[in-house]
Image (cartoon, rainbow, N blue to C red; front, side, top):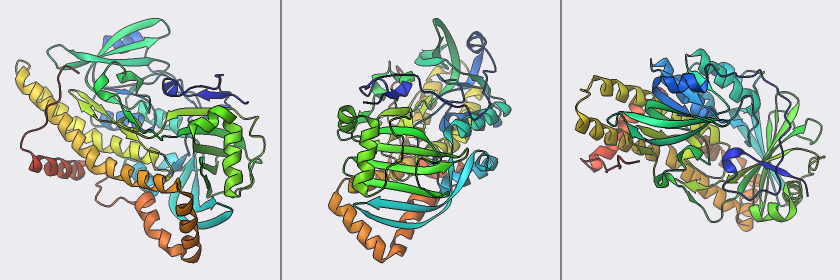
Length: 460
């Protein structure tokens, strides 16, 4: 049975079939730390962001551009591989354009997407997929981190972070930074947690423990040679079967990105290569060649719900705030949307926090609770509904009869799919990409329901 290397933040959630170091051909320049761990701990930060994926890196960049002293920390060294379908939706493209990062989707980092091919039960349907892009995560993420550093963010890589309690009269959040066997304590006025599914930085805080769906699948990923499968450039091929689904897409560098959501028991019994081959065969698609020879990467259980997304001087963003099976390819877009929405909100709050009297601790605690309450409202209004709809779709895909009926209907009337594509792939209705009006409307709706914010424990 071929081996499977799990990503660091997934190890506590999934039983490994064997670990090994993932061999990677680095396709992007290294992103070196801009300061040492000791130097990071010696300063007091306005904002500390944990996790340098698309969510964390974009959030750090946006708050830095608003004039805040910002620290970005990640446990990995960049470039690095990630299990991901590598798709940016139309909304994701508009998000990047709105913040001046459209060049991240140029030909060196991304390939335009135009078609979506869906295969199941020996049938295949195809329809237009406008405005999207397929990215190489190893290149895209590294480029985004470099843009973040250019915006003035201090970056520390290869360092794990643990979130601790409040200090200095509840106006600073403490962080334990660990690099190898060295540990340092840093302090920040605000912490943004964007360290993915495992959210290991919050493992000492039970209130943030996610509820994992009992039927959740795990993610598998691999990079295949361009000759391994017959798939046209600009096409996404999604193969659906009872035990999961597998997506293939060509990315820059003459490579094919493979990402799958699969039954963990099947992987445990048969291994990743055989599980993926089984899904292709059931869907009626010729499996790629050389599946046993590639380096497989795995995630923890995918579908999870977070009971809490905020605490005093702490907000949770992106995958760390909750996730569902990524059939619609919106995972990165959800994360980047939360980053763009959070940045002006954090900057506004910290501006008012700095203007308050340092002696007015009661007012400070009240405003901390208010921010936590308001951020939770934004997540419920702007992110949760998108994930709910994706969860419903993922549930339907587990029903073979429903899949067969949908394939037959799409084959007869393909135009019926257009509203769904608009909803899942391009929908930006009601979203102000500059963030201010969206945040204000979300907060006002919630405050209208209750004149008092729900209590958020200051002990967290």
